[in-house]
Amino acid sequence: MKCYYYLTSTRDSVRKITEDLHNAGVDDWFIHTMSKDEVGLKRDKIHSSNYLEQLDFLRFVLLGGVAGSIFGVVIAAIFKSVDLFGQEVPNSAYYAIVLFALMFGAWEGGLAGVALENRKIRPFHDDLEAGAYLLLIYAKNKFENPVIETMKSKHPEAEWVAVDSGFYNPLSKLKRIEPKRSEATAL
Image (tube, rainbow, N blue to C red; front, side, top):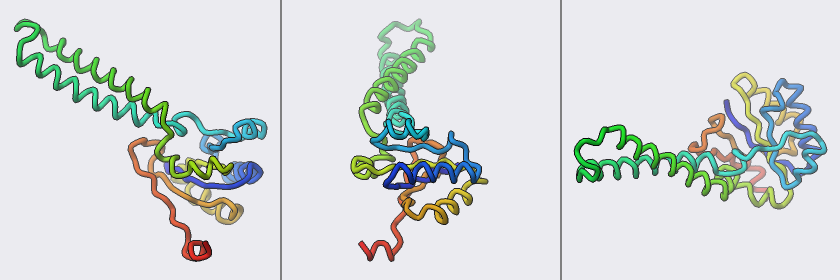
């Protein structure tokens, strides 16, 4: 499953795109829209994006958990090597130290991630602030071509700006779509 990122300038365009994608067989669950105009999206019954797409929560939870695990292993190894708790301490106590550090790191990472914009959305921040709409279209393999063809043939006003190769992998890189040469020279 891939996620296709399209920018468009009007809510009416988003509504028409959503209708055409529904006609192509894409469920509403797989079409998410980001915008400053959340009220307008709700009024037009357009599926808006969720917090996992807007914020860097999930990525920072994972990174915090990894960092906490490493820290926990180091601390447990130090405690075991200096016999801080004596020689009769079961290994489960050291596993508990690592588990506690993992959970604490994930919690701290989550707190940091809630405060930050998702790194995959960050390249489009200025466009969103200027009033544009960013559509995230999640397409299963059988719907990839219909999505691309529908967007090309019926919605030339929407600019294809990126594609994400995974359903939602917070550690994957976003592949930006470069503007065509004719568009780039016209700018």
